[in-house]
Amino acid sequence: MTVKRFKIFLASSVDKEEQWLTDMSRQGFHFKKYGLFTYTFDENPNESYVYQIDFRDANEEYMQLCKDAGWQYVDSALKQFHYFRTEANESGVKKIYSDGESVKETFQRMMKFYLILFIIFLTSQIGLFLTWKGQLTQIIMTVIIMLVILLYLYVFISLKRKIDFY
Image (tube, rainbow, N blue to C red; front, side, top):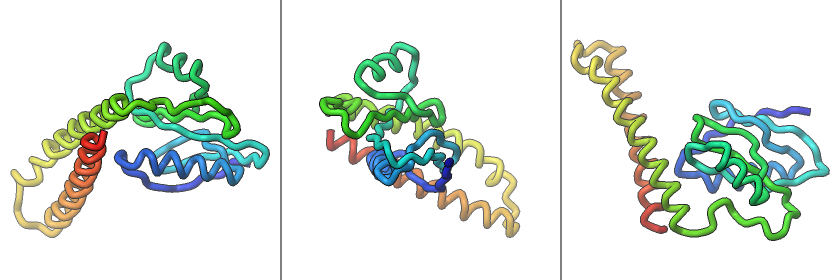
């Protein structure tokens, strides 16, 4: 049976997302597809997996490297977030990145990616302010834009803390 769950994770919360996917698998729901905050699971109480997420441009060589390390590719989001899993009872399978420098580089890639998106977002809003007439719709849009900016700032601060930690 296929089950769908709606859940929002920020880019800076990859570890929480991994833990949630692993917990779902312990309950017999195994992640198979991601789509705009919607996770699709296959139900099978006889299996259990541990999940890892990596953020990078991936090519065949990288996917083979992960496979050779014991990680099965599941799905990707935004062509940057790659979901992998391995059986929970596998002993000796290490995290995709176990050294601090590699983890730090992953968070730096995320920071750069979201900074580019943030700049594009801000640039796309210039028209709203250049044509400002104080209309109700413009005020509502400004409030929404401010909320999105706050969300981006939260993600940037969280990522910066993680980068500084490693």
